Image 1 (tube, helix red, strand yellow):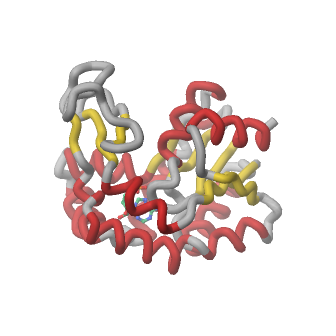
Image 2 (cartoon, rainbow, N blue to C red):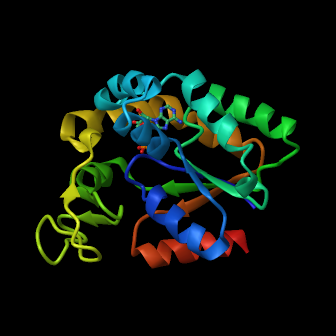
Length: 213
Ligand code: AMP
């Protein structure tokens, strides 16, 4: 099963992706995670990408396309994959079509998680992640038992550099202008599966499973 998870920042793509990995055993390919890893390792690509990420802009298409093209040739994608946060522009989607055609693969579903803009700011600025195990929390909607500490492993919780109010506001604008056109792009290919992204995490996952079955 070859999937794309589409939706604005804060829609819950990463959370649902992790549940899909557990249920379907297909790898999550998150360009945001790949870029953050490159930033952490201070690679040339990471240092270049950081400028865009910190201001809420998109990293240039050719950089992310290169990352995804290489990742999709790895053997673990043979039984399927889930793209999370890619594509984010129409040129990225067109390039993905070419890469997949070259690999003789098709997309099966584009899961579009829908959440109103007004709700996203609060979701994103309250988001916290464990440095050690990557578990996600929210200071209001899903707080840890002890402030700043992970319930699962005791690791330190941190806020992503780009989850501050100014950068979030930019990311939401960039989503509307550059990523939203993908909804029409995939609708035109009859691949779009809209999912209501408001409610309990497991309920949203249930909606996704219904669409996939
Ligand atoms: P995310 O974790 O998906 O919210 O991505 C965090 C940041 O990484 C974005 O705000 C962009 O700066 C960059 N990024 C992630 N995926 C892409 C992509 N497909 N195209 C361009 N930039 C991306």
